[in-house]
Image (spheres, rainbow, N blue to C red):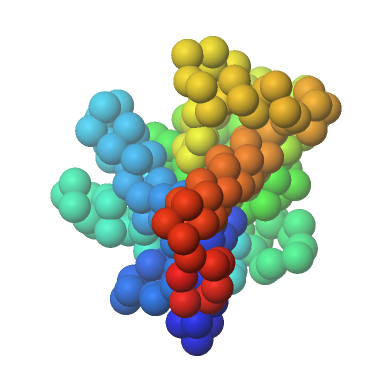
Length: 220
């Protein structure tokens, strides 16, 4: 980015597009740090958990989530976090599983991974530790995770996922109703709702610029 073109609503929560301030970037979704802070608040402040483990993807996404969880836990007085990682574009999670297994049963597990890995790891962890609470960020893809878990006969019980848009089933919010009127049911998902909201936002910006008598340029 050189500051002369706007990047609006990137589908990522990495800190690099937020802090330090990046001129020309307009974020719709919260950061991964924000999402991990929400999971931490729920597991620690609400549930009273102390022993947290984490599986993360060894790339910018996973490392950003790891940093976010570490900071969130430290702010709540928890300075120990058992972690293990797997390599991006693979589903080789057995080494990571052995690390977390050796550490013993946690109160909760946080996973920062793609949906296919989430599904595989949930099954492995449950076979070892039972139905422990599992936290997942929106970056894993809500519907994809749900569908993979259901198709592999895994219960959705004790699965907690942060999300950046309202539930599609919500009827009291006008933007959700507009989305459902405009988008075929087969195409509806949290990701497509996010894109719809961002599209409406951009359209409104353009409308206001034109209404003010200006042309839409990189500068405006």
